[in-house]
Image (tube, rainbow, N blue to C red):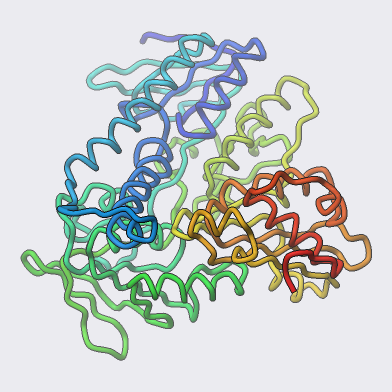
Length: 464
């Protein structure tokens, strides 16, 4: 059987895998990266982060033109949705970025392997490529299989009328009524897309609030804001079944009448893709949810096998996976790299955007940590006003004794870009005073963070 040998073999070409492959090659390793899809990039680039943001941007522009251009003295007539063109734009972006990974692999000397990989022993991956089977061996193996949308036994997915986030990225038409099961970031982002394009969107959430894990104050503001946009929320609602009936769907909920709709989006989180990897062949046993355990070097229970990304748990975010891939291979190379899991930003790309890093106010209260809080509403920010986006706020949480920033939470225009400054500040142990004493350009949205930092000490200039 055909066999190739490498210093490092990476199983999975998503954010953790392809980034780790490039960094390892930069460090002089001979690397092969294996992925079972036809393009590298994983869920994020192919059917996740990137295509969803493309549709969010297109649908946002449509909503702006339809509802808000008049405020700017811009008259629009004959506006309509060309869904095939919108989908073509999305696909072009995906193709460009996946092609970019191919180019980076070629430039860095990474060996790309497209095929289904499965562990055969502690140094060998057996790859099936069509009718061909061959072996790829490495002194060290890195498992980055990623994750897939979670399913529910009572929801009968058919990949068409009832489907997951991948299905919802390619609806052939705008559904008149869409039921979203799950009030987390995936459900709200894709629900927002189709709501803007004309769907009646109903979000069903089993908990008593949307956005579980998010700072509750921001989640409350988000709930109110999205409701004004036309999304209907039903919290504390338990789905008993979701079935297709011809070209319609019926969702049965506990204690209420069934909901009829055109399509159903199941958005109840993600689960690691660790099944059928051949883990039993090397003696690695995942936990009951399918996650793999690793040490601080990202090494599994087998000395030569490492794991990173969604498969090891924690926040299932592409940038977290990328950093883990980099840190993993750098530690392999003897570099003293580390992961700071306390400073990983999270962003929801709705409108307004929601961004968070560090501890929420709820977590600080539960832990009994004494803190001070500074808030700046976007309505007090000149740049937000000129953008016509005065809604939202920035909240800075700082330790009461040391003033070190413990968390920053933003809901408002371009919050996802603004959170980067907060993450860098926290990574370097900054205090609210450090941010308050740093001159911020005017007029910019970043001044809202500056103002919130001033407010921690009661020194806000533009707010009362």
